Length: 462
Image 1 (tube, helix red, strand yellow):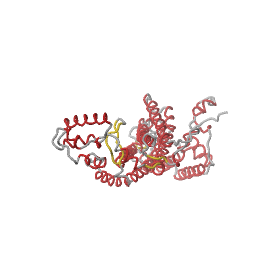
Image 2 (cartoon, one colour):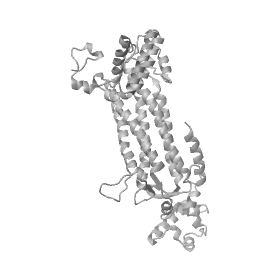
Image 3 (spheres, helix red, strand yellow):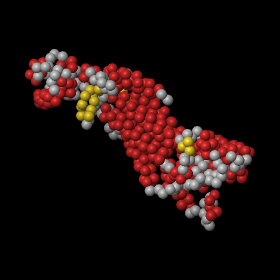
Image 4 (spheres, helix red, strand yellow):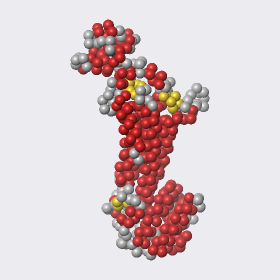
C-alpha cells in the first residue's frame, strides 16, 4: 500500500499505486538533492534570522540537512517512490533525524518556490561547467590553428570549391562560434541567477521573511519582483536549452566537416584508432563514430527545447504539474552537451591528423583561383564585371580543353586580354591567392596571425 503523504490528510484514501508511480519524480529529481539541501539550509537560516523560529531550531535544521548530504554522498540515503519527490524525501529524513523541529523547515515556503530555487542553483552550476568545457574545446582549436597558419585547405560555398583558405582561418571560425556560445551562456546565467525563494505557492507568505537574506546566502544577484512570475517562470530554462542547442549546432557542423574530410573522396584527415571503430563485416572500414554521434545527439537536444516550449505555451498562472516535465530535458541536455564537448575536444586534440600534402594537392586541382584572375584584371583598370565575364569564358573553354588556369600559356592569357603578363602565374598560385586576402578578418596569413593573437587572449579569459 502506498504511504500517506504530507498533504494526504485532506483525502480519504491513498493514491492508487500506478498513479503514485506516474506522479512521482524522485527517480530523476534526486539529481537536485544537494541543491535542495543547500537551498533549505539558507531558508532555515533565514527563518532563524527573522525570528520565525529560534536560533537553536535553525541550527538543528542546518546540521540535520548537512547530515543528509553526507548520507547521500556515502550512499546511505536512497529514497524510493514513496518519497514522491526529492523535497519530501529530504524533509521526511530530516524529521527522522531531529524530530518535530524538522517539520518547521517548510514554514513560509512551498514546493513551488523550492523546486524553482533548486533548478536555478543546479543550472547555475552547470552553466559554469559547460563554459569551461567550451574553453577547453577552444584551446584545442587554437593549438591546431597556430600550427597550421600556412597550411592550405579548399574553401567551399554550396559544397562546391570556392576559394582556398588557411586551415587556421577555417578552424578559427569554429573558435568564434564557441566564443559566442560561451558569451551566450554567460548572458543566460544572469536570468538564471534570480531567486524565487519566498514566493510561496503563488502569492507570497504572511510570515515576515527576508527574501534578500536568502538570496544573499545563495549568491543570487536579485529576487523575483512578482511571486506569480517567480514560481511559474521557466524562461531561463528555455533560454538555456536554446543556448545548448546552438552549441550542438556548431558541434554538428564541425562533425559533418570531419566526416567529409575523413572520407576517401576528400582524404583531408586521417582518423586515429583511439577515436574510430571498424565495421563488423567490412574489414577495410574505419568509421567516424564520434562526429556521427555528436551529429545525431544534436536532434536530442533540439527535442528538449521543443518540448519545453510546448510545455510552457499554454500554462495559465501560476504553477502547474506540467512543470515537473522540465527537469529530465534539462538534465539530459546538460549531460549531452558536456559529453559532446568533451568527445569533440578529444577527437580534435588526439583523434585525427590533417594531411598537409593531400590538402596542398587539393587546392591546385580546381578553378578556385578564378576570382583572383578577375581581381588581377580589375587591378589593371578593367571593370570588374567585364573581367568577371572574361574569366567565366576562360573557365568554360579550359574545362572543355581539360586544362586548369595554371596550365594556360602566356600567349593564351594575352589572347584573352593584353593586360595579362608573366606575373599572372604567381598571382593565381594557391599560396598567393590566400596570402593576398589581407582584409581584416580575411584568410591572409597576416590577418590570421593577428586573429590568433586576439583569440589566445580571448580564450585565456575566464
